[in-house]
Image (cartoon, rainbow, N blue to C red):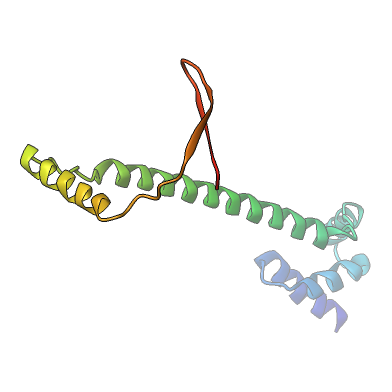
Length: 142
């Protein structure tokens, strides 16, 4: 019974359809079967590599580093694209200044003067404290 099971497992192994549990059972019980399987089992046993204890954390950290790196690249690209779009929009949109005629400027000036004329200036008594070619300093009584 055991030899038949080993034979079917060996056929599945050679076909590449065996599971890990079946392969483990096959290699553990290869002592009594044919020489090629026994040789292969000893080769697998000698070259078996133990999985490090911190493999999951190491892999997770490497994935996170790649994720953060791609995120920072995406943010940098989006920032550059936004800057380019802003510069292009400022270059395209140039508000034109109104070119007023002389007559329109004169009307606006008269309107501004009328606004100022309506206000009464506050008269305060000023006295010159110091006067020079460049500077004149006044003082008030207020």
